[in-house]
Structures are given as structure tokens and as C-alpha cells.
Image (cartoon, rainbow, N blue to C red):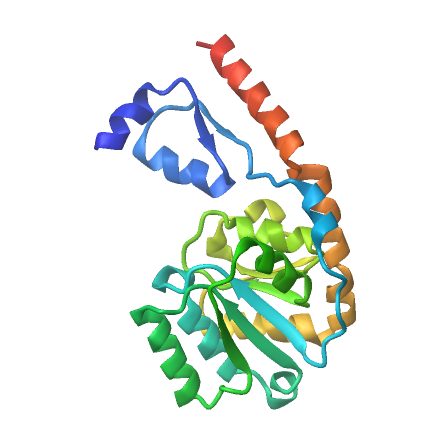
Length: 238
């Protein structure tokens, strides 16, 4: 109710995903909602280390290890993979892992005998982040709820193809060749991983499309120009 008062009176409301427009509309009758996605400095690509050829297909997650990120669901999905797929991959989970939920995740890895497949990398700083991402083969975001995650865009400028749940609020990327969209349940996450590996060379190459998509649509300068235009239109119409 507190937020509704401000939403109702706002001259304009900025949504960073199309799904967010629907969510905001649930709380207010205000129609002055505009969509401009998050952007990123695409020049960051220059600082990446040279990519290495991995013995296993490295699938990585970067972010908080918490319930809404559905890391338990990701671990369960790995246990559902066929052995021939399982033998090809290595899962790297990057993020602060000194909490109760992270301990549950580690215990589940042990229980499912996945200790040689799933690795917890712990907290990493900003410089390490780019180094780690550049050495991945696929980025995965298994969240129950997310915002849309900036880490997906960061992975895209590292030329990584993406496996992400529908609930990551990135519908504007749906249909792109570099994205496998899945439901946030273990069985469907496993399906997405399996499909990605069934034609891995093609999916891996699509990572270049991910980078070009960011350059064309999500570069911070372009996003800033869109925001300025949206703010000007808002002021003009009020």
C-alpha cells in the first residue's frame, strides 16, 4: 500500500523487463510504464583473458547462493542427466557459500554423489569474475525469481550461450539462438542442459550472437539514450 501511493502518482515508471510491466500493473492503474532493459559497458570485453579449451564442458553460475536462485534445483537437475551427458560436463557455482542454504546445497551434492561434477568456487571479486566467465562454455541461471539478472548480460559479452529459467524475466531474449529457456524445475533444467549438449558446437558458436546482441541492443550508451528519450516523453506528456 505504501508503494502504491507513489506508483499511482508517478509521471513515469521504468520497468527493466516486460514481465515487470505486468507486475507493476498489478499494484497500480497508472498506465505511464515504459520498458528499457538494463545495459552494460561492452568495452569490458577488452579486459578478458584469452579463452582456454576445457577438457570438460564448463557450465557456470555466478551470484548469490540462496533459495530464490534455485541452486538446489540445479543440483537435482544434474542428478537426472544421462551418464553420457554427465561425463561431459563440470558445474561451477560461483558466489558466497558460507550460509545455511549453501550448506544444504553442498550436503545434497555429497548425498547425490556429485562431488566430482559440481564445484563451489566461493566468493570472487570483480576482476576474478571476468576471468572465470571467460573460461566458461555455457552460463546457467536456474532462478525461481530474478530481476532480470545482470550476470546474464555479463555472460553474453563473454560470448557465452545461456540456459536460463523463464522466471528470470528475460522474455525479450526468447527465441534467440543463444538462449535455452527452461522452467525452474529440475526435470526441465536437465532438458535444457541435454538439448544444449546434443548439438554443443552449434550452441557454443551461438555465444558470438549473444555478444553481438548486447552490442546492438544493450550497450550502456544505447540504453542511456533510450532512457533520456523516455524521460523526455514523460515530461512532455505531464
